[in-house]
Image 1 (cartoon, rainbow, N blue to C red):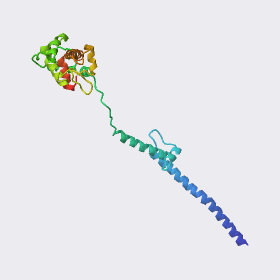
Image 2 (cartoon, helix red, strand yellow):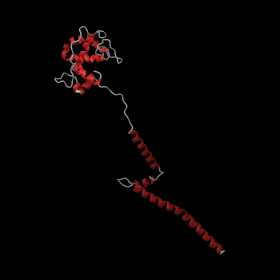
Image 3 (cartoon, rainbow, N blue to C red):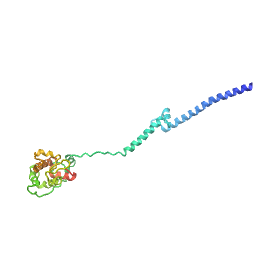
Image 4 (cartoon, rainbow, N blue to C red):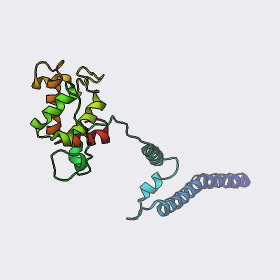
Length: 228
């Protein structure tokens, strides 16, 4: 009986130790591992302004929600940076008006300055009588343009724009010898603007004087930009 009792007590003692150590020992190991992880995390992820707290360090352990969120943000930033480097701006160019371009480029600008300002003056003989060119030649003086100086430039502008045809029409809507856009603008010079070369020329000379100062400055602009 004493052996049996002794054996029973010994067996109970072992089972008690096993319960205590079987639970406490793994818990102690896990605690040590957690402390080490916190210490390592504090070294690795500590910002320059101070150490992370223990809770923050634990949250930085791989597999945590915080780590996953940070990784997702990092990948998004990489994608956005890569996309920004390949961006191109596609827009329809906005054309400046002749007056705006002329103001930005004094060499082809408005006004009648004393110097040539890079303007080429085209010499020309008087045109044949009873032609649209003859009408323009005789009308130029009334706008302050010496025809001996400026007719060559005017001739070249309207040679290119309309060939001096009163019924010349462009797909854009420009019309007549001066290629007014729209053609109806020339009504300010006369109701017969659609058929009368003199009315068209009168309007065209007024336009050139108001915008460029003289026909040679208008021709310089035409040469540089393809329109006037």
